[in-house]
Length: 260
Image (cartoon, rainbow, N blue to C red; front, side, top):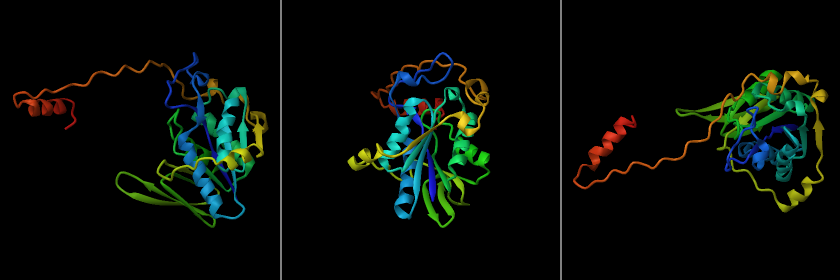
């Protein structure tokens, strides 16, 4: 069985995010890393590989040269191989363009199962897994808090505010998992050394049969129109209770803000 895990190289969320003149994220302005939410997807794929026989886990990413670090991390964790779609024409692609590229790369890899994180920590849209499934014509089981595989059926448990739903899909399928699915493992020294010898295939848009003009910033349906610095934090309101009126002042404040 082959499992493809979609991984994304994103700016460190603890740093300050900045944007280039064209409205895209300035990825050179801060350190990057494998999206934390994608680490959960890698972990779930590796757990399936640990439990099964002859399971290959392939990490797939789309992005610039530095995006290879996302694959490197997945390989260190235990993935078998990597695929890096690298092409200058990809710059500025939105979710629609990215999903088209990923779907083409997945179709080329011919896996049985695709696992994604619930969203990326930079875009936070959470729509790419479903878009990939639609393009491939495969079923999608998204937002899984748990993931299991029995024969050719994948099962997730999706937790909502009011209920937990069990969703099943026949393979091939696309699934996404949440940060409740299980903590991701840390790479061991053995894993770090072994990752250096694992194969990583580089592909261009031409290799995938995708025209340059169909993706990228000019073809994007969604763009950042304007950005502004985050407003500075304001000092909180202090309610002083000297004469027993503090409780009334607090209730008045909560009511005015519609907190109660």
